[in-house]
Length: 388
Ligand SMILES: [Zn+2]
Ligand SMILES: [Zn+2]
Image (cartoon, rainbow, N blue to C red; front, side, top):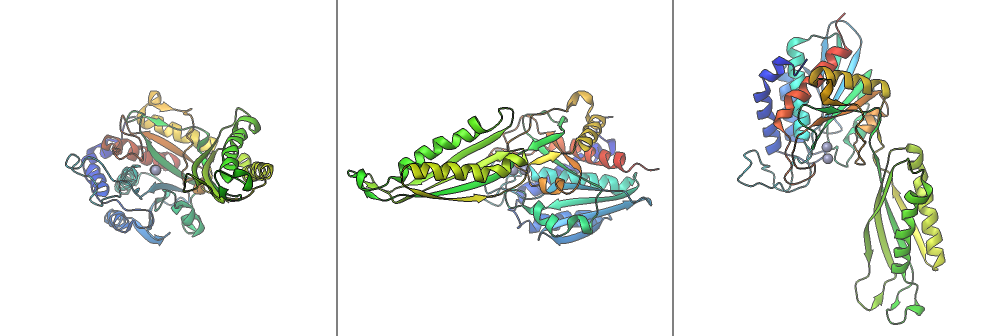
């Protein structure tokens, strides 16, 4: 079965909605207009609306029949601090300069609204659907905040589901795997204190730049020497802040970086391992160092059973040849992970075609994908909450 016909019929309307959201992007926790638009559309569909969770979050609740099964579908609403390119070329270009829907959350919001419209019209299911529109996916943890504010206590969901567009996969194609889809993301900051001196008399000081250089190299051995080669970890030192003059050895320098990992056990071990290298290397040179390890989003890990359900549903919408059941996971991070940590479910990728990559100033969500994504959502509900 291809795209749901009724959704294909109103695809031009979805394109208008998507482009309106694209033209009015808002940063995390500031999605006031977006949240108003989403709430108004849900209300117009006759869907019960709950607002104010995690600030700008919106939850729409739709019931049909008498069954007590329930499902949560989640979309994100926030944009990124990027100046969109294509002035004068793209009619729906951002009108909020310096803020841009460069990750396609305008498309995600629209696809979920499209599914809501179809399901409210047809009610061809038995149970309760919660349409979850979350704020602040990009780094600020809006998904985490919703879970903390009692999302699943107030809106009980047997399962919860997420979707993200992915450039480089054709429109109408889907990809979903059991196990990890996206990595956990932690950041770290190391402050190294030596002893400043005249650069011509280094023996009178302790040079923290040399200590830092050794430390950057030694940190690479966590991936190359401590990890099972079949496991995945990225550890990148991305900032090295040191000194201000040609002829002065500074007192103190700061290194910053990020870790990306799928396995929570490896993730847990990182502060200790980084700390041991940091202490050992600085002691070698008589310097001292301090670690500030900042835990971020957990890994997005699909429940095997629910990933198989997602793949089956995608196959019903797109055809088996358009569903990749074994995509390689990506080292980026996603805060839908907080929801998947407390409810079974799965996160699926939907092809965005041959567009610029996400977070790029040329990126645009592909409107051709709207009906495919909305059909996946609708089919998922009709399959999970089949009428008896
Ligand atoms: Zn993003
Ligand atoms: Zn995104």
